[in-house]
Length: 506
Image (cartoon, rainbow, N blue to C red; front, side):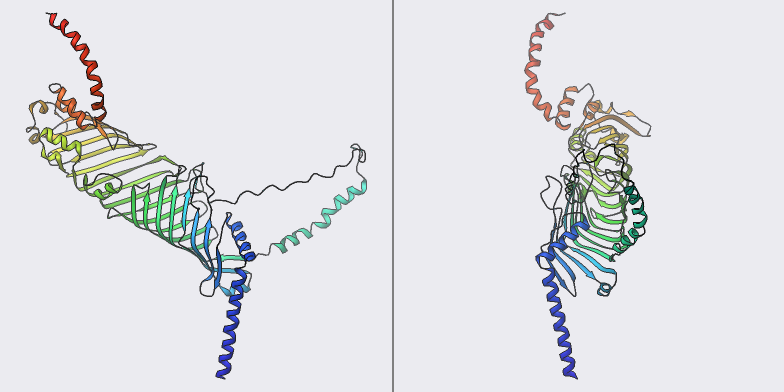
């Protein structure tokens, strides 16, 4: 009996191996692979290329070397490249009319997705089919069928009776053809994916690295799951780590409902919703953050190391359109705890001029910004930096291209005012805040190269020439330095000619 059992088991294993080899030879044949590739391309509505197909009992159907070419002109990488695509099937469902796919897995995909000219992200589609060539009907000589002759009466009877006799048969034929072998997908997973989103000028909008995603389907167009992203980059200026969120996608929107992430070693939470199929892909975002290291955020965005230190806390509620960066609008608040501003050239120079050590290394007891966003511009409703003896405040606008227009105020208490030079001290006027005097000034230029008339306001008329020199050194006056040598000869000529008249006058 044992020998018979071993022989029977060996026969079963051998037959299974033969069947497996036969199935693999079949699916790997050039004709079958071409038919599978064509069928998947038609199902997905885009061109799909496959290098190899294999079948195993433990991994199911496996497609390797998958690519979807780009349809956007000027974008060189393929739209999608993936190491493997796995399809695990419930084998018992093969013998029924309802195919159950247990899991669809995409391994190591890399997607490069660019906006089209309409500002939308669209999956590359199949090239349009050539319209069928319509053959002209046989031309009948006009002499054979005169235009004025009525049709024969027999033809009228046939035309009326044909629909009546054939009407019951047409639905029966349609029902027979519509008997479907419907597939059902239970789960979809993506492992170690990379997504790069580009705008229509091929500039980076967002990059997502090491994306892991698992989801389940409620219906064919309703997907629920969870997503984990190791690293996120927005415009190559703001970076997130360890982003996690539940995800819901349907025909109307993509919703990340409970986002948690880390940025600048701090914590971020919020929600993000986008409508990718709508015009210009509108979105809404609500974010809260705390314990974010200001120095790290500024350095990652390209700023100077050590300019601002401390921990950031705040919020942002905004809406916009991914196709139009200037369409963003909303409001927010930023608070800096344990803040310190140092090595900022304007404050260092101002501290040296006024002999105020506190300005050269400003330790902040209060630092907060309240703002709202309109299309193309950020309006500063309140900006306050307060230390022990000094308060800097401002209101105004910062455009999305970095241009500044701020109405600002430098206020000092009586202790600090008494340490100033007399000519400077007289320019500080009393304000509503008891015990403080202040001077108002303006800030213009750009975020990277700000300009201010603070020196003119501080120095006043008594030291006007010194004020212009200092303003040229501090307020971004490189262009003024270049212009001065060219202007001095022209300015000297009138003075030399005017001096005799001046000496002759009483």
